[in-house]
Length: 433
Image (tube, rainbow, N blue to C red; front, side):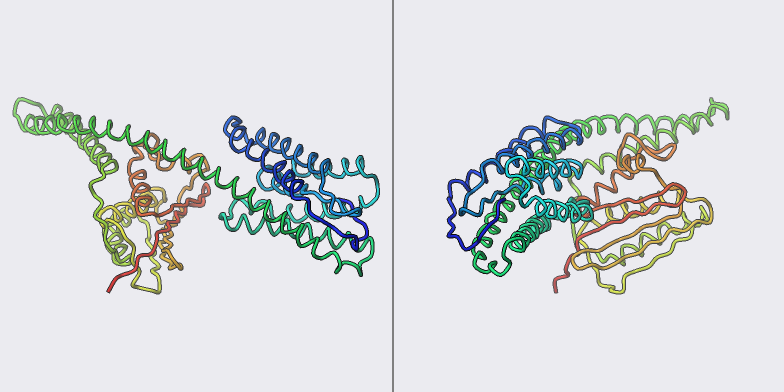
């Protein structure tokens, strides 16, 4: 950007502005639609994104828009900010240095200190805020990116006039307002395209996974149902044989062990059929406190047997409702509490708390047991791997499936030797009079 006497008349050649927009949007579309899918590692993705945005910056600076004899402006800060937000801080830093170097090549030393100051201000802001961007929702991302761009351009505009004649700034205010507006529109369009393509990719992945799991589920249900009947028949036959006088006590003991193993196998099949079945969709309003009273009453003896204390902290508001299947919801909560009991050494404590939020109910189940590492947390809900010695993992998978079917979310935090916390968020339901 070049600055000079702002009293000169100015115009905005639309075709050049559109060219600047194309320079920015085309590389982003190319990256999102092609390279992001082709490249698997985050490091290589960031390098490619930085390279494409670097080309955008160089083209923007090489083909700027001449507004007047004194002002030549471009959109270089849009791809620069996008690299920081969707790439890495390191790549953004490299492109910042590139901007200053290329500015010296094409224009010289005149005004380079202002560019250096603006870049340093941008780097400082992003150093402290970049990590928060990925946690924002769509509207938050738009507000953050557009606001950051606006601050950058305002700093540049003030710096430009302070280096020339600050008193003449009011005469060029219209130019800066139009320039800022065009930048903000372009940034909004860029974020919209990026987030839309990301969302489409997520939806496509979820749909393909759902179709794959549905096919496997139907096949597995058929197999489970065919296995269940022979197991039941064998169980009845062995029960009859066990009472026969022809067997010794040793033989009866072996038969008893076989019957116990068959009972466990049958329970696994029943649990899986419950998980895969779509039949139990009879949702109704459930009073969250009444459900927890019943769950705690059911699990109380089991906790005492393991010398574990249950601390229950209900919400101040007693009439809190959720929508779901009563039996399934109680089964899910029982599973989380039971897992906590089994993870605690004798005389441990499990704290269960219910909190009311604006549109949801927040349930916390915290134990001071052995805890888990990140790998073990990632394995939660996987039916092929259980953290318990003789477990199948189906119980936890069923619990996760039940909470998700109620439009709920589960977050797990844990530390080895300290304990584990399950945070469950369920949408609040209103009771109709």
